[in-house]
Length: 158
Image (cartoon, rainbow, N blue to C red):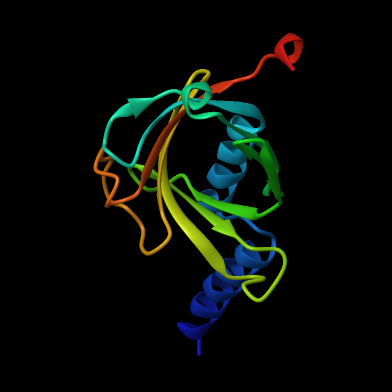
């Protein structure tokens, strides 16, 4: 009986820590979401021919605005404007870090609709995404996914 008591106390402590949300991975993910927070404008991307291109050369614009686990995506292509509001999920424990886009409307609501990896260095955000499966490394091959480089928009630039 005496040997069961420490085991019970240890079990209770582990269970209590889980209930209180003492999850270091979740804390790290929250910090990462905070680092992403703000507005980001696409500076250049790899086009369908595998060449580096600027959005304005292609009559397009892409802006991401991160706030917590919410994302506002504004796109314009040949004068056609599109706006979307997916939820995002990050995993800061992975290398490279991962980013999931989760639909908030329609038939795909609650499902991951795009898988990405990213690198955030200062005011530069590099994202490589795919609709089919999570990329494991960055590539300039458009058959493997979409590669884009974003710059953080300062308050005065908005």
